[in-house]
Length: 440
Image 1: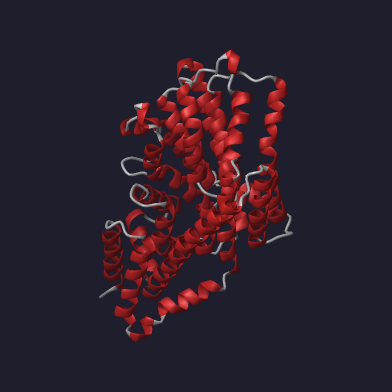
Image 2: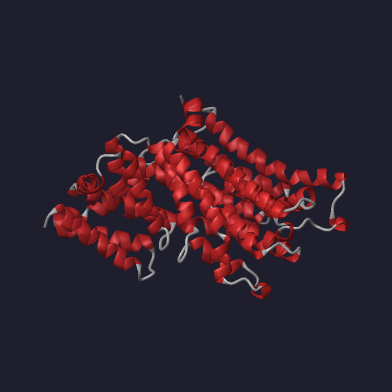
């Protein structure tokens, strides 16, 4: 069997197994293990073992459980409720103010928790009923919550950047800083869209009634809700950027800091601590197995020379233009994102895509940011975008919001994401300028 035939059989087998709905790491790991044994016999038996043991020596792996713990602990602190109360008091009297404020909260929650789902779920449970109660149109409410939740992919410390950085062998600190400006630009574009649309169509985002508006004293008191999470975020990121701590040490500071924040909010209990620890080790275990499967799958691809064969196919199909090759990969990610989550997409494609990009001399920090923006589009794209189904599970049953409404609501935000993606594709300095200033 030649290299391409083996590659096609492995990839097709993996995609077929993914349709069974079983855990990604089990399916990918099974295909990789069977392929190793079929190709190299008894020598292939030890490949899963050696790859698993080798992963233990990556000290940055310790950052995963610490950041996950930080996210879960901050969720227990009730931070999202207090932040929304602050936004309600400050921006509620502005047309579309609750929607614009919700974007800001999503960005902050994504920053301190490192994921996209946390912001969407928090705002779906807190902001969605509040905005619907105050006559916000469903066409904008569900869309802004899905879009805002995705900001956690770009704004540091993003867990997706940690995974990508490990697979691509790129400094994670550089990836985090590279995502900061595009993340802020995207949040600003969301806010601008909501503000402009609500100005043109006031009925879709009306201000709260005069009798519900807070006085200046209440507004300033409510601002204390943002102090603790912002201090924690700047401590974690600031020490890393100053070179005082490594990524792993920053994650440990974040984990300890999240306990302090929960104590400040007076919501720390031993029961909550036990729940957070259980949730942390469960999610960490899944991520670790995903790494094992991804590394083994990649090792087999590299051993076969499949990445080189994939490079030849791409070059033969669309030529040697690096921009076209990157754009083709982006298109593949958008298609895969309709049926797979962000981690699954990356571990499936990394063995093929990353060596090709490195061979072309592509800036891997830039491509990491492109990947995250692409994932945002993919997860909001019908018919099977994961963010769409999370949103469906969050809407109140008596709200009258259908799946079609959710599909329609996301269209403007997908267009905004696409504009940022095109901008990054042709102007890489949007992502690379800040890391260049900080890291030289």
